[in-house]
Image (cartoon, rainbow, N blue to C red; front, top):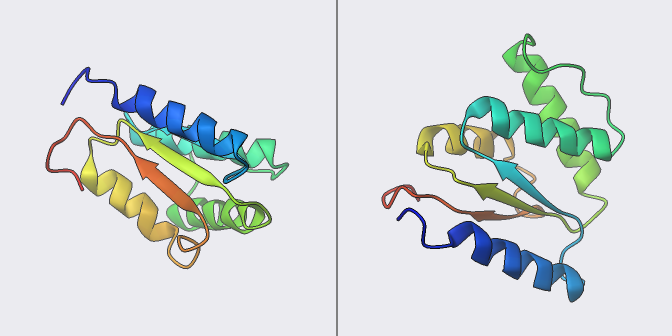
Length: 118
């Protein structure tokens, strides 16, 4: 479903939830590619003052540790993560698997053009 305004609607809802103090902070992750999704997530870590280094050449174990460190920091808040344009189901599911144990306290919205994504 391309171009029907999914991202716009989710951003509007997110803005309303922030205004109502339901969630804070809200972060949008561009899930067009794995690199953009991780880049946005690691920028989130920088905003939360977590030293993530660069994600381009780190091992999976180190990458997972950094993701988990960010999740631990997020637990101090009531966060909402928006996975925007999450068309690659396997990529996003693999990332969400890394969040296991935290995902009952980190809220998520997912937008996708893939009708069979989730």
